Image: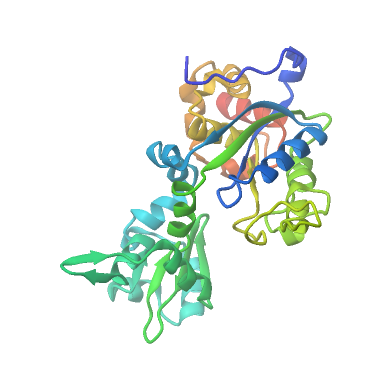
Length: 338
């Protein structure tokens, strides 16, 4: 058995388990330590008909020691922290987008050594402290990234921007270091594992109406993110949330799983669950051949080249985004039997 097996409440009978959506919600580091925010989020979860299956705080130290943030944003993190840009292979149309945006071909920029991953850019732009190089802090690199007028999406989770002033200096995923620092320092996160009957609350409704759009400005007023935007300040006269800053696209209050497969992956990353110990994971394994190894590629967002009886192809997380548990299980069963 894995660590911290998730046990649904007794009133979640077998019929409901077969169609229950299970998602991870966590309060992001910028406001996870605020008691008013925690109370607000929990009250909203319960008021909107979601069942809390588990909840707890996770410290910044645990997030770093367990590698949670780097596993959660695996492809983004690898491109920002490990991959040599010369080893990247953007598609031809993306190379053309690069040339259109920056006036140089991808190959020319690579040959001239002008493209860096975020870690490399931080080191190049760092300063000497005696005999030691002190890399640029993530938040400083993030400011330069935010100020860059042009950015190009080369692939899912892969972005490049020119942060140079007098001469080009292209950086891959220049935002990641600052985002990572928020998780591995400070207050950590506070998470809830929630369940909801897909016949009553679809995954699309969960994300769109209950959680709200990624950009709080676009979120419905009654959604969690919409309400956090409206009530983020606190004064003696009102019942605001006492947040330090106005929510934005990055610091939008809460994270929520985008779909059932990605949600299962997130629970293995953040909570240390084994897939077999998770109610949805157990079903998924049973319906796809009974072996945990069968679903492992999907949990790593494998590319689906062809799905029999489905005119779909692409990354698994994208294909199952906003899909409900019964659909995801049928889809994966179809893949396993193909």
